[in-house]
Image (cartoon, rainbow, N blue to C red; front, side, top):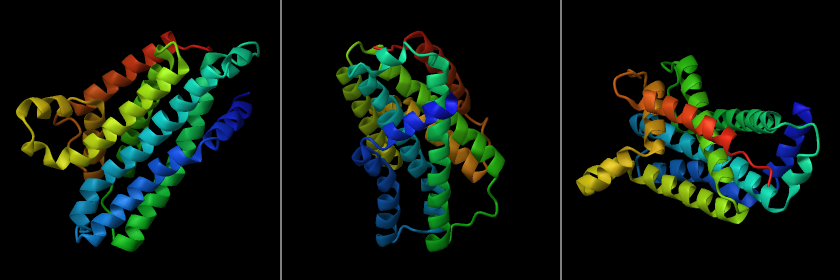
Length: 238
């Protein structure tokens, strides 16, 4: 049954390629633009790679999974699905596993390109720790997206909210390196957004620094649990 539902999620994945093309192409565009501006040093790529990967994760979780879930609610597809043996946990798990596979393939390709073209040194990377933090970050965004996709009664409203959240987080990712130039209040607000905590844990895992030095890891774990419970509580077939 899970394999059958994963085929369904594949069809959803291919339903609106323009949104995903934006999310998948943007990391490559930013990488190559940075290299043209002379910023493609080892240090720059090392620091920026987690930011680019975050864009891919958000694209899969917010633009693909949750956005299409809201669309399926809007067109009453999930109402018909409710009459089948497919339970919410199977629906959620199949979408989660399918997009985890897509994310793994894409990030492997992205790191390979960065390594071949920009001489990214991979010898000192703790792959186990990085994979664990990547899995945690993906899970947090996945359940956050499903919560947003379900909490609004109207599917179109949920889709609009997901787009706002996605592009707001993209904006935050692009100004993280310039926060010191913003007013203190704005800095504090941005520093406490979920996407910033995700970037922090991914950078710590990628660079090999102490994951427990700050509270980012605990916040991401806490948000994952909270949004996970909320996504189940507010799950809607219609």
